[in-house]
Image (cartoon, rainbow, N blue to C red; front, side, top):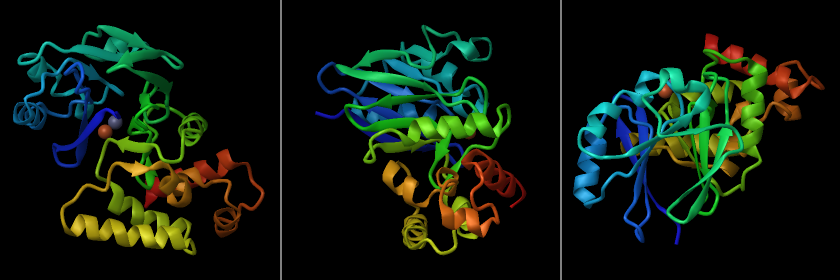
Amino acid sequence: MPLELVTLPALSDNYTYLLHDSDSGDTACIDVPEAKPILDELSLRGWRLTEIWLTHHHHDHIGGVDDLLAVHDAKITGAKADRHRLPPLNREVEDGDRFEFGGEAIDVLDVSGHTLGHVAFVAKGSGYAFTADSLMALGCGRLFEGTAAQMWDSLQKLAALAPDTLICSGHEYTQANARFAVTIDPDNPDLKARVDRISSLRDNNEPTVPSTLSDEAATNPFLRAADPAIQAHLDMLGAEPVDVFAEIRARKDRF
Ligand code: ZN
Ligand code: FE
């Protein structure tokens, strides 16, 4: 039985996720932009929150932790490298660590780039990767603290997961990402089809996340820096993928 996944919008364009194990009744929350939507969903479902997993230190990912802890006695997991700027951690993790939740192994990947110390949590058994502001639907996080090379490495780790992995990312930025993606990869039919799907989802106010890794591999320009059509379009045919990635990231910053 896969762990049950609930996707919740929060603040203006963030997402938070609940992961629930029906056998033990344990529930984890991944990132806490604000407490209210999480508290409402937990009481609606009659779930108790036992764990909070934090991906990185930005306020829109941790701002609701205190309000959540006021109601639920949850243990907090976050990056050891970020302990000085995260809420007090009960479990400090780093790249390659593995812990158990709901009878399933949860792998920790360092996915620095957006920040240093950004981690992703991967539940391989259920096929979920909580990537927050590293790999996003048709995008990747802006480089606030890390380098393009660090983000490229981080994306390669995520790209190596099973193709049907659900990428649970941190924001509803997909439509803006789509407008940019078509300027980088204009002749990609998979991208065109995905842009249409994204538009109809947003027209109905539906989330565009989670997405599948296979969709990202086929359409996300930040994962496709080795693609000859994209390289040719950027006048960078034969360049190192990391350099092509850096160019795509720089163009997005100016877009
Ligand atoms: Zn962030
Ligand atoms: Fe964010």
